[in-house]
Image (tube, rainbow, N blue to C red; front, side, top):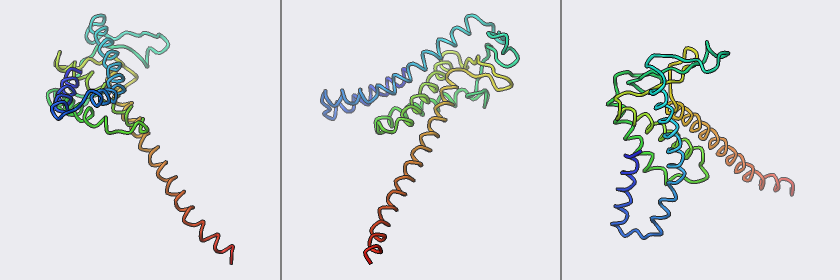
Length: 203
């Protein structure tokens, strides 16, 4: 989150040096409110949950919060040096760098997204929150804390979930946009055909 704030600060400084007035600055900051609000919420939930796990559960220990779901669902203190769901282990430095790049791209690109394109805006907020959540772990501990264990699925955390949900929302947004475009094309085809049909009726 700190890197995101620094990037935004530098961007604002450049704009101020180029003659940006207070009203323009206010509009820019307002554009970022949805992004940083969702991102901050995810980062707080992610970091608080991980801190509780590290403080209350021994590394490798598994607890069953709901007895009926014992064989299927549990909470475990586990560490991960790769990416989401334990993939690409021992590549922490690479993914730290990639997380920073992704964060910069999202912050730079977000203001250009129309408000009507809410799936993309939500998806980017989820992606940024997840990326920063795991980035904090890598910077502070050199590894990521995972704790949600479901069946035989790799152990994951809130940040991983946020990234995955962001991908689903993004795909949903593309599907909605494609559906909307097809409706527009269908409407345009009908408008083109109407004059021809009316001319045949007159004959």
